[in-house]
Image (tube, rainbow, N blue to C red):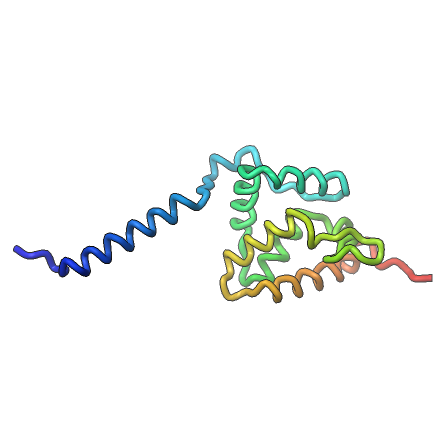
Length: 157
């Protein structure tokens, strides 16, 4: 009885599977049991934002938080980004943010939370580009004051 595959094909298949196993072992595996101590908290203050940004420097916390952000999901990259932003921050806090920190607002583009949300969304939606993500996020932050709970626009005198 002969094996249905040629030896060459068999060796290729084994090598392919070994590489796949190696890649799985390299990537941080986060399960539901690892995320018990991590919860998606809605940020509504500068102190809360700074505290979360500091906690995201911890590798284990970051992996658990990323797992929770991935579970949010979305129909496309833009939808996933919006859902992740709304789950992590209130509209009133987002109204005081923009990407670069101009006009008296705080820069969101240099935060750990921004990097994590971007990484999560771009990993989950491979057709979604980084430039499109940044464009959509800037627009989402721009119109935060006009959404419910955003506080409205400030008048320029």
